[in-house]
Image 1 (cartoon, rainbow, N blue to C red):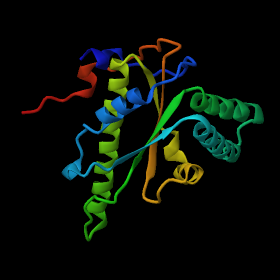
Image 2 (cartoon, helix red, strand yellow):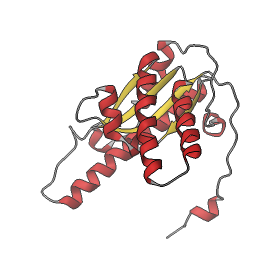
Image 3 (spheres, helix red, strand yellow):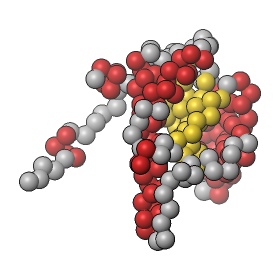
Length: 196
């Protein structure tokens, strides 16, 4: 249970490379997550080098357009775009977690199809949590970025992903240059009902 309590969101990394063997290790942990009907609807793209730059640029431009539509000041927009790009390019490795509905069940009604999509998304989230915990066990730092959810077509196009890969999260990964900070958690009594 120590990895659960030690895990922190790490946003700054050293320049030290992450060997492929460690990337395989965290991805193998991701594959052990539960999934509906054991369909394993997760897909992962490992980004190094230029791929990170391409994605950071594409997502940064989409963020710029979104914030301009929000009417935010130009200086604020520039800071946010720079921060986003630096988070992506500052990590030696990024792992894009996607979902696919390819092997999931289909139903004749929209309600159950929507449930199936929710279940697939939950499975991808469980896989990402496994990945984050294994990274912690290995002494690596990682951070979960939800930004791909705001621009899935931008991400898919920039990385030339298969059409059925739906970007869900970007995990930055590397050797930590900071310890991260513990965030406050709600009390168990605030989020739990005991029934029966």
